[in-house]
Length: 111
Length: 112
Image 1 (cartoon, helix red, strand yellow):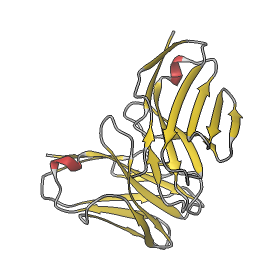
Image 2 (cartoon, chains in turn yellow, purple; image 1 turned 30 degrees about the vertical axis):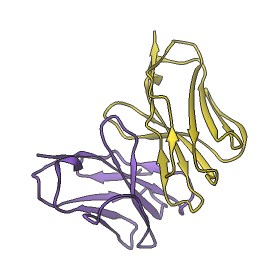
Image 3 (cartoon, rainbow over the protein chains, first blue to last red; image 1 turned 135 degrees about the vertical axis):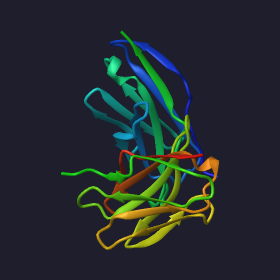
Image 4 (cartoon, rainbow over the protein chains, first blue to last red; image 1 turned 180 degrees about the vertical axis):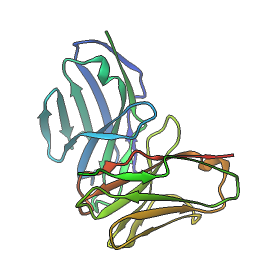
């Protein structure tokens, strides 16, 4: 059973701080890793993806991948109240057929 | 450029009925996957369609079936609805099978 684990939160950070969201996965054969943001009542929105070990930066977002530790994280710099949402970590299998999602971490950014 | 579109957005059905949900993928995408998201949980993979065939299926009963048309659009059918089928049903499209997937706005199904 492939599993993706996230702390459900809520993670509360003050406006302007760095939010750090973490995710671990069980399948060592996983190839692709995704972060989705989901506002309440809305569908998931893709914000970052990473395929190789190391860091990948896109604006205020940085995704970090460590395949040896089976760990992927998302850093949000200069957090804004509009970043308040649930962040879903998803992992793609070798065949590229399905995404396995974690349960999501709820982030609250307080003004 | 139209994104992934799903219809209807909301639906109320009675236990035992059948429902059909529809999805049009993002322009240029050829792969459609369906997910079920219960309240407070992450999406669960139902199945994926590519080249009009079901390529992989998640842990869902045969009551859940689907189809992909030559224009890449897709339908999800659920028979003999149960109260537990109440959820947000999400369609995701991608180009080929192992690339970034983008979600539609979802269909909120309520079974009463």
